[in-house]
Image (cartoon, rainbow, N blue to C red; front, side, top):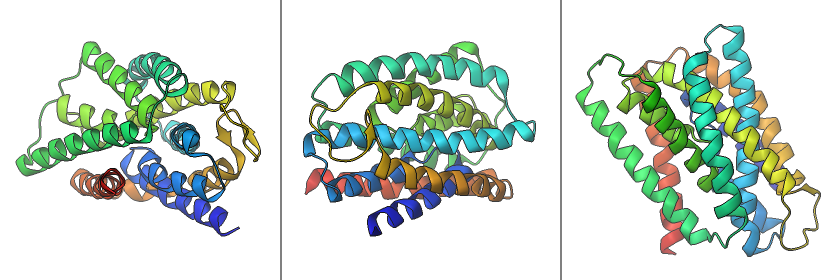
Length: 269
C-alpha cells in the first residue's frame, strides 16, 4: 500500500509542477515509475516500455485538466496548438510503434537520450536567462511544424510528453513569452499523449504480467498517479499565473536538473 501512496504523492507533485511550468508530468514520472515497477515485480525487459506508457498516461491526464482551465479562461492559442499537435502526432505514433514497442529499446539507450536532451535544454535556457532581453516573436508555420515533429519524437522515445522540447523551442527559437509557450504546450502535450496512450492500450507486453493492465497501461501505477495529477495540475496553473516568466524558467531549470542527476547516476552506477 505504501508504494501506491507514494505514487499518489508523486502525482500531486508532478501535476503541481506541470501546472506551473507547462512541461508535463514526465520529468517527475520517469524518475518515480521505474522504482514502482521494480517494487511490484515487473520484469526488467519491460521496464522501459511500461515507464514510457504510464508516464504518457499520467501526462495526458494532467494536460487534460490544464487545457480545460485554459479553455474556460479563453487562453487557448488554437492555430499554434493545432499545427504543433498534428506534427507531433505523426512522429510520436510512428516512433513509438517502430522504436519503442517493436524493438529492443534498452534502458541504457533510453537514459542516454534523456540525458543528452536535458543537458541541451539546460544550456539553452541558462543562456537565455543570462541575456535577459525581450525579443519580438519570430513565429512561422514551418518553425511550428519542426517544433511539433521534434516534440513528438521526444514524447515517443522518452515519455516526457513533448513539453520538455516544445517550451524551449517556442521560447528560445521563436521568442514566444514563456507563459504563452506554456499554454500552447498543454494542447500539444494532450494530443500527443492521447494518441500514444491509444497505441499503448492496443499493444501487449511480451511476458505475462500478474497485475491488472490494459496493454502497457498498468492499473496499480496509472490510477494513483493520474488521480494525483488531476487534482494538483489546476492548482499549479493557478499559482503559476502569479509568477514572472523568469521565475517559471528557474523552476523549470530546477526540475529538469534534478531529473538529469537521477538519470546520469543510473548510467554511471
